[in-house]
Length: 93
Image 1 (cartoon, rainbow, N blue to C red):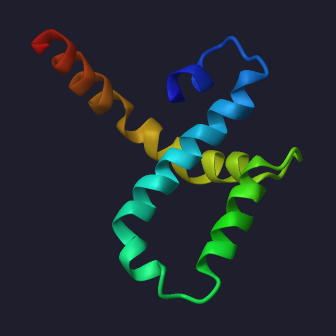
Image 2 (tube, rainbow, N blue to C red):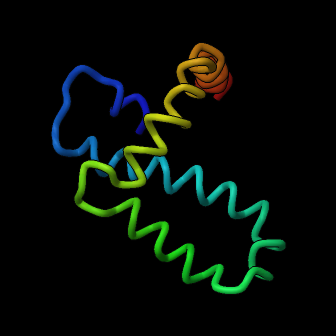
C-alpha cells in the first residue's frame, strides 16, 4: 500500500490506501498495548472516534495527518532496508 501511495500515478485510491496503512499501524500498536488500554475509561469510544476521524472525508482527516507526519518520514528513512528484506524473502521462497 505504501508503494502504491508513493507511486507517480495518483488516483482516488490514494485516500483509502492511506487509511489502510494508518489502520494497519494502529492495529499493530493496539495489539501490543491492548492489555493496558482497555483499563482506560471510554477507550472503545475514543478508538471509535479515532477511526471515524481517520475516515472523515475532509482535508484534515486523521489518515492524511498521521501518514504525512509520522508514517511516511519513518518509511522513507527505512525503505531501502524494507526492500532488501522483501527481496531476500522472495528469493528464499
